[in-house]
Length: 119
Image 1: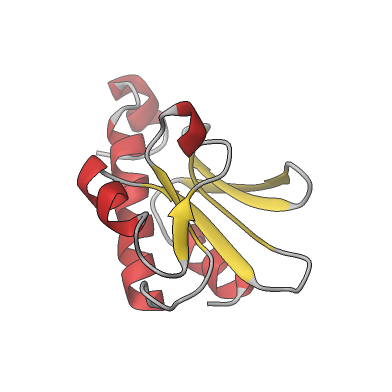
Image 2: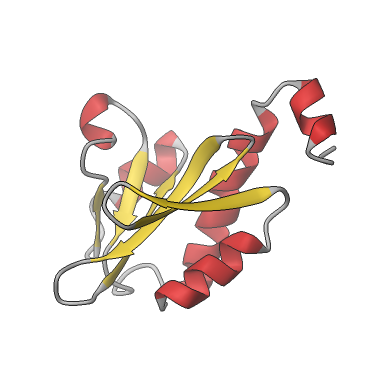
């Protein structure tokens, strides 16, 4: 997945907003809460970091091309960084991004969801 594809997909999710921060990372949020982080390393390889369930975290952290997300996972958060498509292809990555977006959206207050046009 190219960075443009990642940004395009995240932009298609309900009420998603984009900001570039933290040294050039492409951060996607819903209601001000982060659900995905994308960027590239010094060699230009795209990485995507996303929130996931406990079960998905336990499985993905052992897969080639994935690792617990630096900084986030070390603080007990269930975030994975996909570095290559070796184990998680682009279609699966989109599913994980959708699933990262959903719980963040659902944790927003009813008022915040209403203001964002979310049900």
